[in-house]
Image (spheres, rainbow, N blue to C red):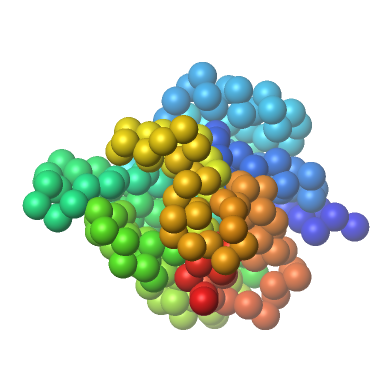
Length: 251
């Protein structure tokens, strides 16, 4: 039997990168998946790639009306949820002294406010015994220059996993965080290129940062860890931070 047979899942930011890889894995494991994204064309392409047992809902997790519309559609189509992977996020690289109020509001709006209200608005649809996974990051544990605002948002998500695990224990709902390391995604490559990195910026970052495995990770490697946290394989696991980082935050 497949690990997620008959489960209904939501993946925010499921139109690219880790979110898209996880959506594909969820469907392969028997789940029906709702994915969100802000860009209509990219969302449609992601739905096409996944191919079956998927609905795409355009929207911004930082927008309360978009979230209300999302959960209304899930309720209408499926009536309940078993898994939420709060994956949508944006990154900012700026040194202290160059951070603007707009930068702060944008990153915290998506990465913290967006995650909080995604999960809170999902609660009426979540079945008892459901699984919530938050996409955090190794940057919450590292002190990399120029990443302070982004790192702070991911530290907030690590805290959410602990406190929400306590808040939801009476319903048997498990809440965990997955913390990727240097992962070879288009978004990270574009961010590093815009900051002046070279031809293979993610690979260069992995080597420069001293990843013990000597390479960046792939979105699918993170997706497999998310499947574990979403499935009954992790039935006695809650409140944890699962690093998928090639050892960079461990040794």
